[in-house]
Image (cartoon, rainbow, N blue to C red; front, top):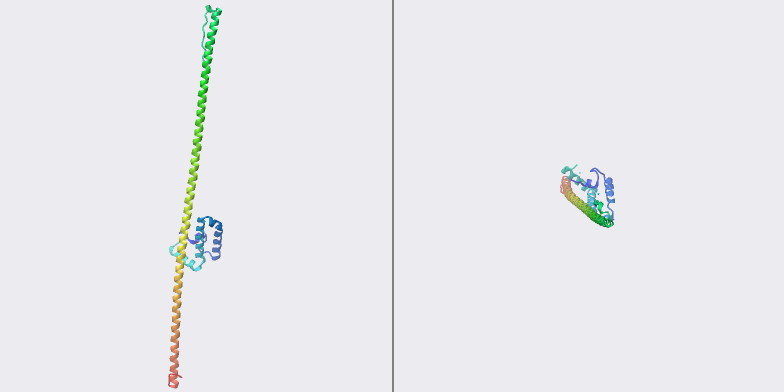
Length: 235
């Protein structure tokens, strides 16, 4: 059970000056600008005010202390071979053989060139695919990081909302408890006042009765003296 003393941050034996100092310290944390902009702060300060109002009044504080006491409260490339024949050494045969070699060499160079072009194309496609895959992975990582950040922000906001709701509920509960305790203290104080008024009225009635009885006794004594001295009831 959270007491009004705990709400103000003081001990139960605090005196009035220390109580007021504690209230003023707490009040300094709630300037008008904060109260106007923050509903939770406004509710909290109302609870603090109610607690101070109850404890600053000796009568309501005494009743509240009694209530606490009754409750008991104390956190590699390939080269082709070309065969030569010794009988074929004429100029015509040499030219034909040279043309044949050139043709074969051209075909080989063309093959090497195409093979190199194809390899370059394959390599370029592979590099392009690797770059695209790397780009996609980077985009996926960025998207996952964004989602993680959004989840973190959402979780933080949810936790902040839950904390704010909890603080608001605690403040409302403190206010309700303080109001209920204040009403109980006021009710007890009113009852004591009524009882005191009845006691005062009874005392007045007894005093009037005693005065009337004393007057009657005095009259009787005077009448008795008159009869004794003058043989008549009045002198």
